[in-house]
Image (cartoon, rainbow, N blue to C red):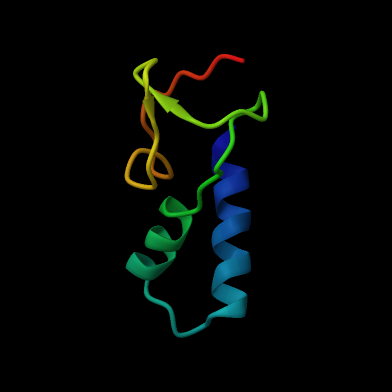
Length: 66
């Protein structure tokens, strides 16, 4: 199901940045991050550590509870 969504994101990025390589587009997608969880609380990694930008974006098992 995500293929259509990712394809749309790639098409949008490519149309706005026609000189970007596939690697640049992949990097842009993977480094998009959110600072808060779905519960509007800070992202917590492994249930105890405050997440840094290196912990999310490309995906990591994060757990955040209110």
